Length: 254
Ligand code: ADP
Ligand code: MG
Ligand code: MG
Image (cartoon, rainbow, N blue to C red; front, side):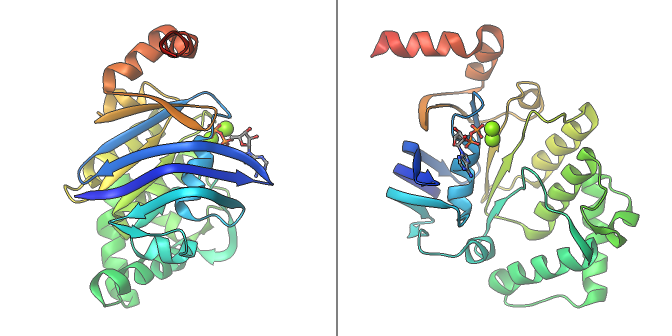
């Protein structure tokens, strides 16, 4: 079954068109990697899918399980199972991480299971899911992301994913110094949380992340479009020869 279908998507931010016709089809059980140079529009694409208010869709369509989602608010998209990990996770002083996660989880469970968890049930669930991310329970008592290291924010993001059980998870990795440890947590979290009826889009600069997660498809983005799609070999080629080689090959084909 198709989870996400994007057709000829054009989108702008600050009145400037950034996405120039993106096509992407994601089915159940698939892991897609999106790679590409800085500024090619990867984060813009993820924000447009999540419904970020600063980004405007000019034309084209985004369907989630056959339903047009362009009119849905970001919160509604989250409720129906679209998860975007924060590229730069927000800090929310004064709100404990535990409380934040409980509210988010219950909003999703209301949609998914028509039921919510009380504080005791939620603590049980969190304790169980914490193991997936090897996270110290003390983090739950701290304010959301406040003073968290890069690795801790990443763990928190995967914990959130483990609690929300999204249908599609979009994880936008930056080159902003994910250490080996954080990389491993992200990789094992994704591998453990992948379900046959869900899908993952992984935006990454790291071929080394793709050593631990085997994507079904690798897409290369350039200038607001997906210019090339392949399997994991494409990521390996990219590591070896860089984006220049892709540019050349693409030009030769035109
Ligand atoms: P990537 O994630 O591939 O590095 P982005 O989607 O972040 O690329 O950026 C694509 C282009 O859109 C860049 O030229 C960037 O400067 C521009 N852009 C992204 N967000 C904004 C914004 N909020 N305001 C203005 N320009 C933006
Ligand atoms: Mg960027
Ligand atoms: Mg980006």
